[in-house]
Image 1 (cartoon, rainbow, N blue to C red):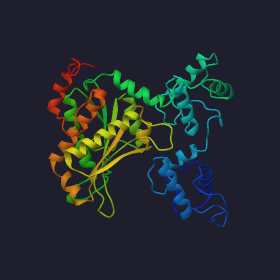
Image 2: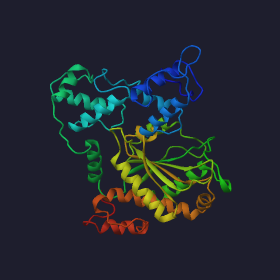
Image 3: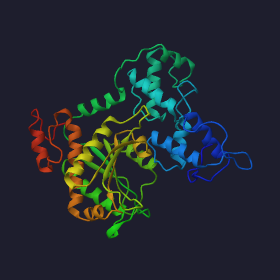
Length: 398
């Protein structure tokens, strides 16, 4: 019983949907069993203990920790009750099956050398292709159905990768083989909000949507100068749709990387600084190794160039980060509710510094082990000379 996209369950609600949430929270271990408060029909009430259980689950799974069960939280919560073998898995084009059992399946396939794409818990085309390849390799009927026969085949095989994530190793190797240069790559830039959704507003009349688009254009100009094809998820008058729609758009572009740009806001006005986010969660098997690396480099480069407070890099399972086939990173640069951050972001030079940080951080991702640059020291004018000096590789080589 998945709540409709427009419905969110929160403290004070009751009914069958809340009962379904409580059942799943008990299964995940976030909500102690036993009777709690109930309405006149005997259904559980979404009280404080349920809210705390929801927050605990959201924290562990890299979701927005607000204690509200919306579409994204419910989907992850519902999928958490499945372990591999509990149900038959197969690819359904109209409805991608999600769950922890899909995460386990993808991880197992990757360990055995069959690439399922991103380990994201979503049974999409890449996972289906990996299942069929696995079945064919073992002489099974290659029908893509993960049932008892395929599960027995899994049980009879040893893992081929020990001591690390197979998907992370492949992601890093793919980056290494792609070459040092940025030229010829495609980056999808997602300026937060847009259209009628203006996002956060703050001091000096700053709007998140306008600021993010301004920053996106500055990044586009610098990346384009290095031969990168930059695609925006929306224009000044459109909003780009939901996070799922933006992820689907990025996938359709076959991009190398996705960068989502935002600012933040707090009620107290005291919070300040810059943070970055990548796909992953503490107790979730899948994460983006390259996304984490880029998020870390980007944060350090922005802090070094702007002086904004370092609010760290965080793993999250937000839809845009999870559903893109390529590494995706979100940059939250400053709080518009903070006078100091707002003043910095109102200065065009700060936005130029952030744009430069994006390009340099991206270049450092592709330099890999050959990167000997000090954070905040490499400038755009130095990039081509820096590349040309490395192993005789010119800036235009891949």
